[in-house]
Length: 120
Image (cartoon, rainbow, N blue to C red; front, side):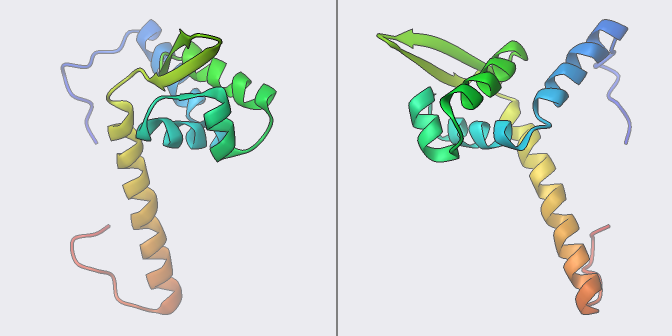
């Protein structure tokens, strides 16, 4: 896969990209993002869906915010989080499609089904 010519990355740019990918490498953070893709939410609303402790969810939100993936704003006494980078859903969708394709291929191989046309 070729990198597009309009995306030259300096060493500093490579570090910024790595920071974002590291932020996406934790399952709890992906669960938080899954919730935020639906709509903005407070820590309590996120906690209701993803489980864990308030301290743990807050820690993960701080990482996502520090990586410029989510925004936060005060709403009275609550802090409300939302997706900051509109390309994030596209990135996650592309990766999820690859995971689904890999799972189908693995199931086909286990069950002895022929590979489907057009897939690698």
